Image (tube, rainbow, N blue to C red):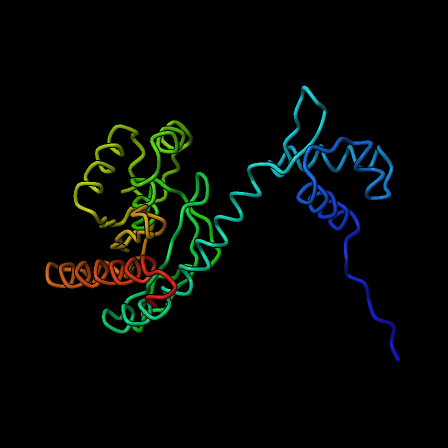
Length: 258
């Protein structure tokens, strides 16, 4: 019988043990944690330093004790949010793809970036591809700029004061012009992006809201500009808004209503 291979990484296991110990009993110091975990103070200190740097651990400077940090709460919220979203969205994404023939993308904001959660490939011979898990900018793209429009003013300020990369000749990089676009998106409740992320491509996006009415994601159809005219624009916009509303309605249901 062949020997079973061990693919575990000891440092990762130790870091998780620190977090589990703090979850069970917060406000522990280095000495106490080292006794609890059977590790040297030096190793525990380095683990805590790394976790604190990433926001997973918080250090009380007055008491020199540690507790779980804000990043744990952020991840916990996101697991619940994305879990519900990924349960509600697939059927509507399939319907939208079948109705339009275009690519369908489900996008969220992760900090100062957008992230593609899921995609459906279109049926046309020439397609514009997005990849699940891919990160992108917030200042360009249909669903990406939509997510920026519904972010907090702090996030908007940080994005617009940072480096605004130009992806095509049509990418808007002037902060004041982007603020005007953001206002239009908020007023209209959707966003139509043309050639700003990829030359020759369009994206039409609408917001998805949770049970409290907060915008948590965007759904879009994306394809080649050659297929976008006044009629298809109106058709796609109606379809995207309908899909976003249907997903939002599913997210607003309580468990005993589903």
